[in-house]
Image 1 (cartoon, helix red, strand yellow):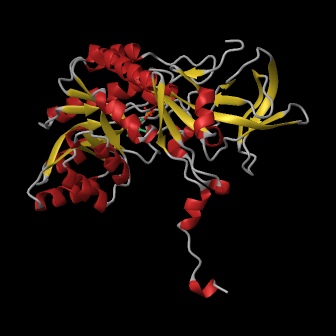
Image 2 (cartoon, protein in one colour; image 1 turned 180 degrees about the vertical axis):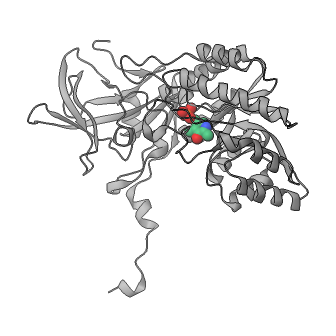
Image 3 (spheres, helix red, strand yellow; image 1 turned 45 degrees about the horizontal axis):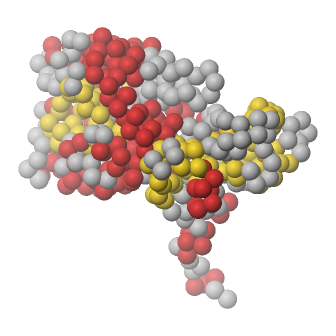
Length: 415
Ligand SMILES: *Cc1c(COP(=O)(O)O)cnc(C)c1O
């Protein structure tokens, strides 16, 4: 694309930078829809399945609306996410409430809303939920989240299925616990849920976990328990850097179909990253190119507060100039925040850029804007959604003045 300009669908990213400023997240509606459809098609082999987008990956209201139009429900992990899912028009019955620390107030709000499924994390949570539901003359639809003790083989901070992780109940204790929970008044226990981790580039750990769940289902049924639903979680990885080759949704679907063939349950999935990561970029502007001792530092106006993944997970995001000249440079890429961790890449071969040039971090649609903060009193990064030749700001830039206006100096400190 020499002498061209990077576009999102038919919109020139330079036009978005001009209109909205930088840094800004830019999402493609067409890509969101395509990913939603490819994932659904991939799972066709497994029969009729329920799909709940794990909205923590990208909870923007407009993104949720697109995925709701594609027939996705929502996997939520807080009362705030539940309210977003409802606000986006996702029916309560298609909402699953996951999370290791649902508060009593959140359980109560979710019962009020009539959500479709609670994924229980511990026995006491089930007891509290069942008592609340019983008191209202309801029965809470639930599954028990099991920790299958498999190593997802991904970054330690995004592994969730090892015995020592905080999520789910020990698979060895699941049968007795299931029996006790199923008997509670106010409880409608329907099956099992798991989620072993994120950014999985290999199907083997998922398959190992699913095989264990298959054995657990057989065991539970032997004891006469009712299992109609199994939630297999999310976790499918995406390509971030050259050499990343995640399984395709079709390969995933074929594995699921093979492993679950005899389960005789409704299957449910909670994809997050795989739907949104490659539907978004973080558009940024080069502030300076600062000479360094080995390589120059490209200092961009996006920082770790806007895109935390490199600082948090050592994550890789491809970097590309919006107007590439064809020339290359080897550089470090960093933001303005006063932390050494505010570094996106070291010694990377990138498009040659200089001050005021526009560039993008690719694959930034998942766990990007949603993790943003205002650290260093920076603005909260805005979001733009593109659809064909049009675009709209779908989240405003929140300026430091607005944040400042929510702070108070107590009277005893006033002069
Ligand atoms: C985070 C999460 C997901 C989504 O994970 P991805 O890797 O983004 O697909 C699904 N289910 C639960 C319970 C989660 O916590």
